[in-house]
Amino acid sequence: MTFHWIAWTVFLTALAGCAAPQPAGSAAPFLWGGDAEGGAPYVEADPQDPAVVRGFDVEVAEAIAHGLGREARFVQVAWSSIDASVERGDFALGLSGVEDTPARRAQHAETIPYFAFREVLAVRPADTARYRTLADLAGRRAGTLGATTAYAILLRARQRVGLIPVSYDDDVHPYEDLVAGRLDAVLLDHIIAQRSLRRTGGFVMQPRAVAVGHYVGVLARADTALRDSINQILLARMADGTLEHILRRWGVWDPSQGTLFRDLLTGRRVGSGGGTGRPSGATVASVARYLPTLLRAAGVTLALSLLSMALAVLVGLCVAAGRVYGPPPLRAVLVGYVEIMRGTPVLLQLFVIYYGLSGVVRLPAFLAAVLGLGLNYAAYESEIYRGALEAVARAQLEAARTLGFSESQTLRLIRGPQALRYALAPMTNDFVALLKDSSLVSVITVIELTKQTAIYATNIGSWVLPGLLCAVVYLAMSLPLAQLARRLERRWAAP
Image 1 (spheres, rainbow, N blue to C red):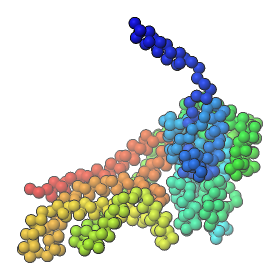
Image 2: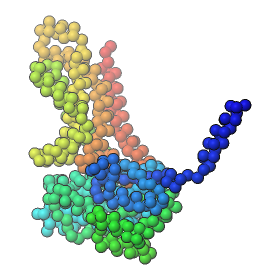
Image 3: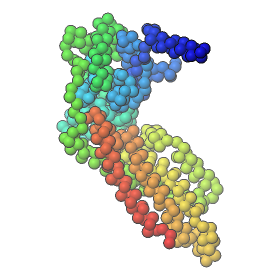
Image 4: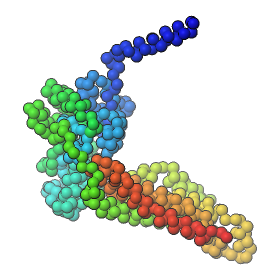
């Protein structure tokens, strides 16, 4: 009896606790996403406490959260993935220099603009009079951040004047390559250009803007009610001077921001205006438009993979032979090479070869990609060949020596052919892995299949069809190789 009374008491107490009103400060946090890699003045890690982010987008997000009666909580996401992450519900609002574009407007719910930016052309001081506009850059290389308004402008300029667009995964290396002479110009937002000018110098900005645009917040397409609430908060913060104070504190306020705020407060439609359009989606027309580009990018991927694998095989054979037949000092050096290449990320090696060595030798991006992948995979190949050479029975080697064969004859006639049979399957696996790892070279401006697919997906607002097309093309390149390897294995199989 006592047990039942205790159970009922606990149950009623828990029920009352669930029904009791929650304190005001216990509302769910307001999750917003951005990319701290983009740096100041947008979002950056606080130097005093790297676990905390700061920047004008951070303060805008906090003002929005305060207006909603909630606490802002930051979610780190790659800049190129903000749209996809907001749609899948990783956070409610994306803010990190997100541009208002027709594609984004069609696919998502956008807030009203809260910042006006200008696309400015940066050139080396010696080229100030030579390259004033995009039309002056016919046949020249102009870089920018991929999947941006600036990149779309450069693509149109390629068709119109023959300019060569170069896409980057970040907004720092374009200016470094401009100063180093790899590019003739860079087109990016004036905030980014001013920040890079203070950081690295070595270039000038042309005074005339190529285009103007706006930063907005992006929400999932279904979150129109929350979008409307955020719009009202942004308008209120414009009216009471909060946004101006934030932008001034971060040194990005200029007269164009005042014009933008006045237009919005007087009811003039600017940018997206918080509206949504009909999504363009992945249509047959989009596939027909992008398929030739994807196939060209696949050709780059295949050529890069073949050349890198050829280099890996050649270097791998030399390293393996040196470790098996070389003197102890040479073996120690080769062991160090293998461990360094296998123990450090290939992405880091690509950066070192392309950017780190630029003061000594300025390699073309494609050549740097071949060297980076080839030398990295050579370490793995060498271990395959060394293991295959040592797998040959010692009795056969002793028999060859007894018959008077030299070491070179033994390697060429007995040890080598058997080792090749042992190494064939691992070599095939390595080539397929290299084919996929070639997607990493987009960080040094090589536009291969995966990078071109990402551009396609960004433009249509969906990864479904672009991802399927990319997978089909990769399979079309890798499956024939796997079939050839299996056929050779059967032919060379020991009876």
